[in-house]
Image 1 (cartoon, rainbow, N blue to C red):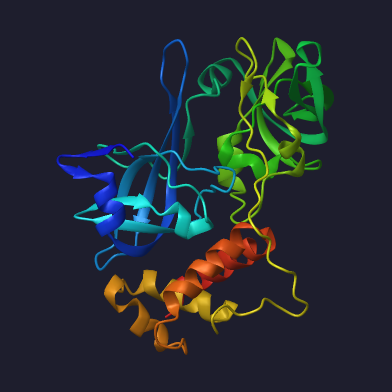
Image 2: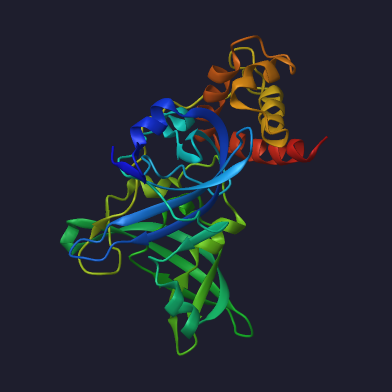
Length: 325
């Protein structure tokens, strides 16, 4: 693991010695290095529900990344105002190998500077497009594959038309959106109506998809064209995280903690700014047995990462509970 850039504080120290707390991904910014081999750089604004709630900026490459969603609850470790996402505790993932502080957290929402959207906005007009068909096509004489989307585009003031968009690269924060029937915001070049650029950040801010998995078709794609030069690996292969069994009539409690208890405690911890050392005693006020909260909360987080319906239900219930007094 690399240095955080926090003076002499190492990322390992923050992860090992930092206090555990609930958090939320409030902002995502994606850039890339320039050179012979461009490398994607992911920065996150993370709201940390510590004794005094604060927002930290962190550069962290998480694996698997197809579960990352704007607004999703995460487990964090924080120390002296610095924070990292505890991805293993959040979804049994890899904590990543590059951690660094950012001078300031990314702005709320999603900014992606790797998609060429600035040019598309300058030259294009906004429209909507629905995915009629998503398919994996062979390329490079069968040595690679690419994702193709057949879209119905509806520009304002013009008749709808059909277009094939090839070499599609779906960002990690939007992998839940690559489904037939999904309506996406796009930019259309008025001089070349076949030039359609999908605005994935706006699409994911409109429909964050907390807890929803990547679209099934993306698991089929190995090498995907980025649209620049040779094929590059851009899609995440479906991983082998266990999927919770579907239980008729509701979700099975974890360590005695039901879905409603999980939501109530999690929202209360954030709303009431409970200190991490008091999490367990606070949970006991909601009926959680002593010492059970940490393991139950981690178990519910992992379950949510494999069940989009649970994630959607949690997101709605959490927001309602957080506003409740």
